[in-house]
Amino acid sequence: MNSVTRSWLCATCRRKASTTLASRISRYSTSAGSRHDRPLRMAVVGSGPAGFYTAYRVMSKVPNTKVDMYEALPVPYGLVRFGVAPDHPEVKNCQEKFEEVASSPNFTFIGNVAIGNTGGHFDGCTIPLASMMNHYDAVVFAYGASKDKKLGIPGESELKGIYSAREFVGWYNGLPEYANLAPDLTQGDEAVIIGQGNVALDVARMLLENVDVLRKSDITEAAIETLLKSRIRRVHIVGRRGPMQAAFTIKEVRELMKLPGVGFHDIDMSLIPDEISKLPRARRRLMEIMVKGSTTRAEEAAKSWSLDFCLSPTEFLGRPDGHVDKTVFEQTTLASPFDPSSSVTGTGRKLTMLSSVVFRSIGYKSVALPGFNEAGILFNDSKGIIENDGVGRVLQIKDDESNAQRQASHLPGVYCAGWVKRGPTGVIASTMEDAFSTGDAIASDWNSDASFLKGESSSGWEALRGGVEHGKCRVIHWEDWKKIDKAERQRGLLHGKEREKFTSTAEMLSAADVN
Image: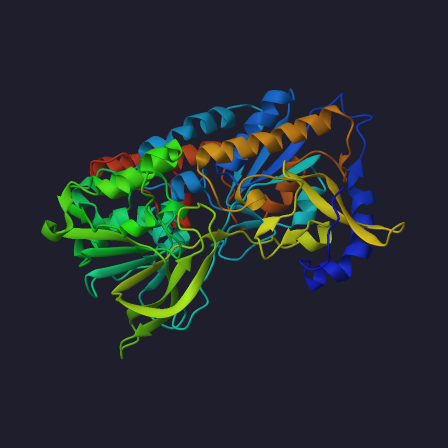
């Protein structure tokens, strides 16, 4: 077992851990003595790739597993629907596998139902976490990352025209939470994107791409109208480290380089190794693309972009009307410019960049669900993850009286997958691998007489639905989602594209009620 210090436990966790966990474990956990004559009953919180891939893995490894998948929104697919760039439809092909999972008679989709959390839920249904845990053998948390990391610098919260990349991506992808974001792209021609991951490059591509190309995708019509009015002609993608340390990948850079009529400004060659050919293949290809640049010269292009390295933002400056006007950066230096893991330090030298609009793209962050403390679920606030053993078993704290240390052990029947397990990194393929590891852990535990949850019953949704459906909220099941899906596709036909998404839960629920 791993020794766990008290430093990252919140005050509430520290107060309650010693008194709460033991009672919760004795109430919920059971050995497998009598379970092999009945199916595993599992709840999955979240309907994105991590949730679906975990469900698929367990259902394929443990015969007759019954899965109830809870989703706060009326529609499934999470990041695939609301995070993947609209001009990357091929990335969404994983939905076919998810539909296969959902077609099983042992699978139940329970949409418009949040677990523990009513915040930002648009009058949907809510089930307390303790109530849910009382009716399942296992619970898997796969609800992703719903908050943004912030820079914490002057002007960030006060000035208009500063958006998070998550807000912007959610807005053009039709996420109800940001349907009314209305980003203003008309204040000038220079956009600054802080961060150099793939999401930052997605934002840049949306700003620079020909709108007629985007019209054919499932981007919202509201986003199309905003982009048509955009005055942005120059995009800076800024990072505090160098090209050898950049987080973006080859595909995203190549797409930007190939945008018709869009030019790339030359990068600082002092940050590129002299002998690129000796680099590992992936890093070599990335350096070659950046050195080669775009087919259109930046000086001759109608729009242009740059990768601005070794700059760390320190302050936003505004105009008298309260709109952002400039971003102040501190120039940084790398301890070893060609080492992918090089450390970086500030130089004290400042650089100011015009900023008609700013997008913060420095990462997402998961948050704990209400009820975690009481259930003994340890959440690391600083990392934004549920503490786990690396393969998805959620950890609890137990006191070891023999050596006066606090030890981590698996909280029986409780698991996690995806970004809430490992942090907001990777692509859908890596999320699949991560979810499979969680699924394998669940299957291994079930087949090896490990302890699982034990409450009043293992009846799952059947035990909970009465209290939910007697309320005023509307529960969405898979057949209801199919109605929403059909209505969106019909709307899309009017605009010559695959679908036009509903951007409010009210519209989604209305479509689900059509006979």
